[in-house]
Image 1 (cartoon, one colour):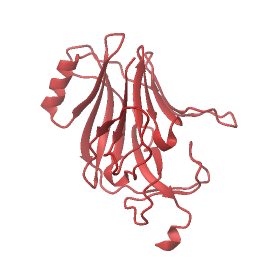
Image 2 (tube, one colour):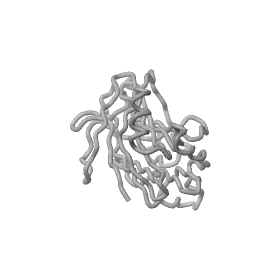
Image 3 (cartoon, helix red, strand yellow):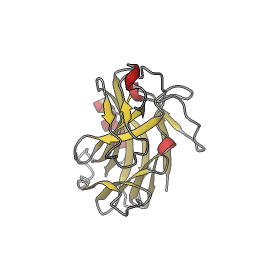
Length: 229
């Protein structure tokens, strides 16, 4: 079993939540740490079943799973391809002020320029590390961040790339609350005009895309700010 703890951003400057990627046998897990440590987890199972769910049981006993899906089959070696498990986008404008350092060793991933985003992709492939590295280099847009061989002979890769996302601005009402939301009305503006430091970090997806592309956004409680505009 191996693991990678990573943050998009720079120490003592703007940054994302801390994340952990690890495997157990042929099952793969991705956990958002930091402010929402041990709240949300992605699970990618050998069977092909994938889940994005809250970790803790809900008080009312309702389903804590945000999304379930079946991943695509992994193409055979020699096809020069793989199966994307999930993508996480980190808009540079939404990174937060530094938070207390993680207790483990962190891998820092450079943030995108303003108005752009860093895209992290988790990929499962039958290609070996050298072949995958050559394919990534030939494409030019992706950079290899992490490689881990699995028990089955498949390989787990994490890559990063930068893309233009434009302004990203979302308001999230507190009633009804979304899964994991405990702060009431939330605002995720493209520009932090009130200097909040964006203390709240949330995961948001658009629709039921499979596999999902999830956006990690930085925001703050909306109460008291609208009147100050």
